[in-house]
Image (cartoon, helix red, strand yellow):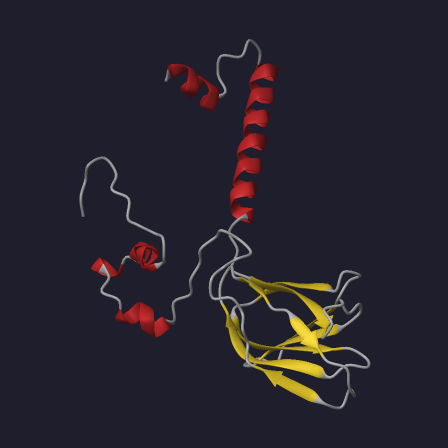
Amino acid sequence: MENAYQLWRCQGASSKLQQRLKCLVLGVFLLAAMAVSAHAQTSQASIRGTVHDSSNAVIVGAKLSLVNVNTHVTSETTTNSAGDYLLLNINPGTYTLEAVSKGFISQKLKPFVLQVNQTSTLDFALTVGGMDTVVQVEAVGNQIEASTTELAMTLEAKQISDLPLDGRNFTELFVAAPGVSPIVVGGSRP
């Protein structure tokens, strides 16, 4: 324990220069560790998928438009050479997604909800036809997270105010999430 304390205080070095170097290395290490753990936590969502035709051949250069139903903010992307697309850093909310490609009938998903830290996989199967026709499709986004092993949930203001929280302690909201259980530290019980 004494050695760990000396390392933390950056003591025990034979010179001031060595002491400062140890502190600098320790500080850089701690900052890097905090940055890695902070990177894993996000309040954004993402959507990925593939656009193909009725014969299951990929469609390169298809344009995808994601529109927030409430704010009308639009994000656009196109499919790559493998027919894949990716939309990142999407704020949680209700969205529509449309796939358009020359020579194919456009396909638009009905409004669907994206939640915090959710990665949805939404594939499109476009049929040959004119561009003036739009087919609306019921969103079949995965409710079970298949892209990552992370769990997340969003609580609305009404849900939070209706929860019986002891002393209105916000940390008790964590146990409302799936897969979360309270931790009892040092034998103390609530």
